[in-house]
Amino acid sequence: MFARPALSALQIAAAAASPATGAATRLPTITAAATRGIRAIPIKRQLTPTSMWSRRVDSNPETIDPSTLVPPRVLERMAIPFSKTADGPLPATPLPRAPAAADAAKQRRLKKTVLSMRRTVKVTKGGKVVSMSAMVVVGDGNGTVGYGEGKDADAARAVKKAEALAIKNMIAIDRYDERTVLHDLAHEFKATRVEMRAAPPGFGLRTNPNVHEICRCAGIQDLSAKVMGSRNPINVVKATFQALQSQKTADDLARGRGMRVHDVRKLVYGQ
Image (cartoon, rainbow, N blue to C red; front, side, top):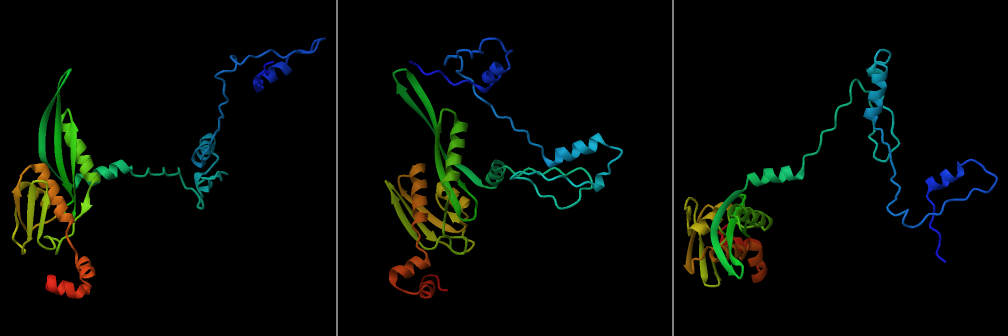
């Protein structure tokens, strides 16, 4: 035998309210199909202190002085404590600033440059598929910089994707006196070799155009650099970033040589 499905509260109440007859009242037979899709929806009415107080003042505008009223307490977990007497309409609580707006304001202060834009065509069985590839470098001009690559059928969307990825991949770059690299650098990436040399104040940026834009976004003002081998923009950017990340600070040199940081600074930087 099959078990009879449970009756809802409305059906039980309707059966109990039926007129009494000589025979016993028989509850209607309910199938599982009749109860499918029926669910109880709880309804909770919340009255905030502002609405309760305003309703009381509006109902008695002549007999109640708003300056003598104290908003009633609300027995809720998130109730707002009121310790002062209200002398007028309650001020509206200012909405917090949206995180998206704060991020957008921060992004507007970043320096952005499109270093490479390529158009590629892929021949498939169904025809040619055109795609745009962009490389963007982003920095705050104060030692933080990042790059990203984006691909899309539309050039504007490809740049937007690359910019978002560059912001996500931003890293901190060590600088000497907040203007140049800590020491001379040389790094190879595939067929590209990048050499960087620290420069005195006022020297400027005498580098490859792609390296120049990276240094400008990173806040490096004095640098001499040379790119040898392949000058592919993508390889140049990656080689430059890897070279900047390979710098050794005075703490790293002291730890590797077993010397004091003060002695290393005096030996390397003359301080």
